[in-house]
View 1: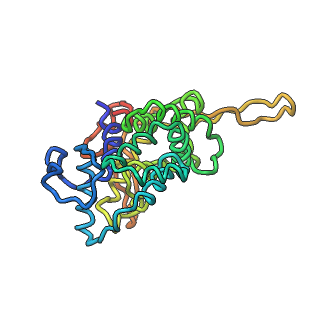
View 2: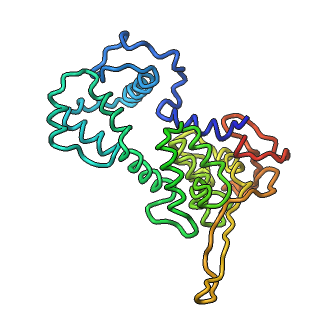
View 3: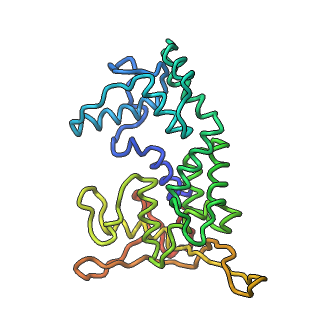
Length: 296
């Protein structure tokens, strides 16, 4: 059923809506609300997200900034999507355009621009493996995977699923480079657990490996329950002989499955040892079943 990887990716896609407890079907139609600004186009999903953002402002007593001018907005959306500013001619043309849906249309246009694929490939490569390439990680492999994903407009749930379940050669399956980059230390998958929650769930939980989180609902046992999904893999680094020097040098790396089964154990601050079973989003996996937990 692939609950773990699919639920993780769905949470990532719906991140801005997390914790609302309201379904998209419950979102009121646009005509029932007074809006300070409209792009001229209505999409239930976008409207739902906007509603959750507004609710967040109200809950935290935040006064939103004024709506950006056409010139400000055009510069920002260009930098965000394609990584470059618009030309002076485009700014002038956009400012004079009276089409109420011009912002939505501009977004669609930029998403079709080849520069969008290149920009998002660069942005997400840096997020997933860092600006400085870790040892035994293929930046080319990571970029190839992302470039193809963005060019084909693959759904986010599929991309995230590939990243967290990846196995194999770091250039033949570029998605494994995310895991390789997060497994540089022999730390029982602590770093990859923390990075995955930060990148795809939008929360910082690394402190919960030692204690309950002081600012959100995550508990120490949840960190290790989540961590247990990443215990069934390990990086393998292959070396080869340099024909010129006769010395051993790095060849390639890969992620391989291990035969790990059973729960994981962690220590509370009191020194008491505790046991954690693989559980994510209230979905339990039998720790002795031998299934590949990341693919559940």
